Length: 202
Image 1 (cartoon, rainbow, N blue to C red):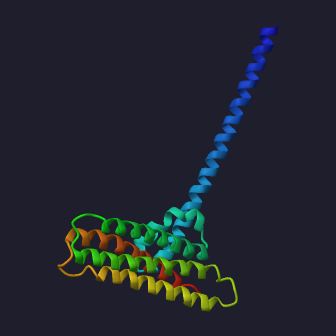
Image 2 (image 1 turned 60 degrees about the vertical axis):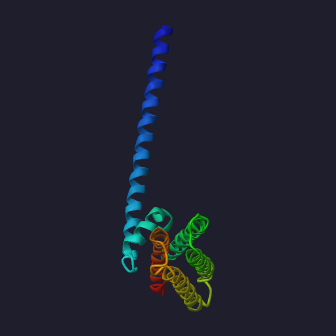
């Protein structure tokens, strides 16, 4: 009798475990399906927004990882774009600074790299100013702050292009030139895309 009771309890216990497992799997499946749908929707929003930029593919690639944060919010889209660009410029500054420390640079190469570093650091300051202005768009002087953001971003883009201009000509080694222009071209495209997104801001 006791043995039958134990079997009955075990059977009920296993049944409950199976039911809870099925419920958990169902909830997990629904959550994943919802998350997948949301990410596809937000990804489509980012792709559409990036189509208006100078470099759509770079724009989409840089912002897609933040789709769930951006959702379909134009303000967040622009703010994330600026933050991503600022982070990339910080990384570029570190990379170029490391190149300055390598052996075998000529005096002209070292001087050109130093000038480039100054330009990139100016770009960092200008991007920070742009982000600061983004936080003020909810105020009364929205148009004034939008104009300021455009000014700061244009200045940052000019500084990045000035850096690349310094490596034109035959006096700079091809390896040094290629390393720096590749990374600076990347941040210049990100900056240009951020400016494009701001230009569509009403």
